[in-house]
Length: 245
Image 1 (cartoon, rainbow, N blue to C red):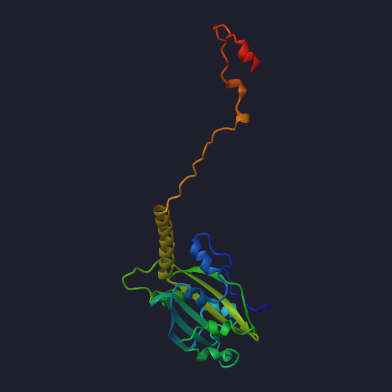
Image 2: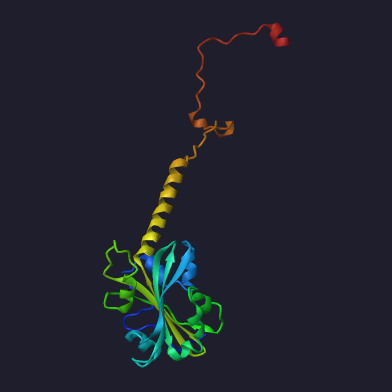
């Protein structure tokens, strides 16, 4: 289904930057429900941190075709896996759409937005775009609050966004991945390698020993067969009785 809105701009790119890790490129370009992907890692919980009328960010108003000071409805949540924050998400839609086409977003509470987006065939989605966020971006500051106080905030965070359109009304969803997600994925990969090494140590592969049987008579080379040496003894003369037998 075609969509009128494009989430890409000079900073938000369809192709992930070369400096992203393989895991980051994977998660930045995964289609479908992010909540469903996180559930494969553990129990997912949604915590709402903000629901209110606000002004759009500069890069949001441009992508949605809104005037810089046009009011929007904002919903911000944190997605945790096994009680550890993995994603900080920010969604925005024109205020008029939040009481019309997208009014269901106001009634979600702690249910994930994916319940609305992927159960309605009239919803279309733009391409996913991604970028690095610095502390100058408002989403970085939002996500930094969820990083544990004992962990120094990284210089940049990785985020992606896309626009969902329903009956001509846009809803932009921006998702910032927190360092705990990458640490969790790295630990899973390390555990898989350790398990594979342990299994190999416990059950080492034995090389097959080739069995060499005795060659068949007709396969023996006659070139190396021992030659009969003539005897110097005179032939034994048989008696007449032996010849007549």
